[in-house]
Image (cartoon, rainbow, N blue to C red; front, side, top):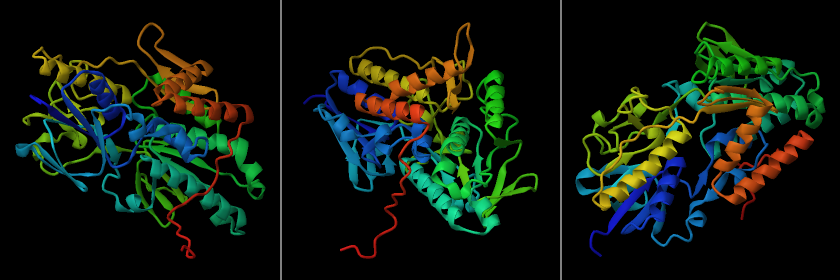
Length: 428
């Protein structure tokens, strides 16, 4: 068929799924191929609730093939991108190769350990579903171990948690752990009733929630401290060896649990020139999200660095709203280009930001006359926004009822250790 095209999207996160949905709604002449290393989409803002046993994985994830089942111009390939060959309009995956007319990189970010190997090897990241499941297993295993030991120093080490990174994820993990300590820990583990269960939140900056308003920063800090979280600011984690967290000022914390939320970086791809990558390995793009100097290759969301937006000359924040807005406009521009119409440059519409701290406590910064909310009302806004952002009605309903159950009972029966890496020696 004349002018039939193949649009390949690498990455099925916020940006990738939004772009695929928008293209499939339009009457484009061609097919959309989505490539992802997983066979499911998941909702990163709620990973910490999976990690702390307040949500099940199925609440925040959904298979791509099920989601796009009714789209006859859609194909899915599960695989990893290994190389891009721009001159041939071709990509190499670990499972084969694909020719494209347009290639969109929506690969998000990966955990950044800032080159510290000891942290990479021993800390507990929380970037993927696998990370969240592993973190939940490790927390529960260490509580089980602590409940059995008579060594007070070991028990303290096993029940001390250090969260590196004072952004929304770090704040939310600290708040959820404080809820676990307050409402659940000593009921499930009466052997630990005299244990302190220290929770540290460590960040190299002078405030937590640095991108948010001063009001949000102060409210979050005060709320966490009232919940018993120990906050250490202006302190980077420099090393983590033998269960000891070393801080920049030479002090240390004995802990078997370093939860790493301190940084992210975009991925680099073989075949793209080094000059295409900017700060944090993000791909530099023009105002239409096309990678500078390379035809037919685009980058959207966290992996892109656009400096043409007058309100964000250093690039946009790595937020879901940026990713989704770029995906929607790129879809419109691809359709407009096919129809010989003019494309539009991307300008980010900042709708604000928010973070939950603990039960009934959250902060929200929004445009307009009422720039800041906190407390119960902000918590309700957070609940509503995150429910509506889940990929389909099934996830919205199951998550809502899980939250309702947790709110009423102050508990959640999801604290099972299920670790596929522990292979049964009697397996047939």
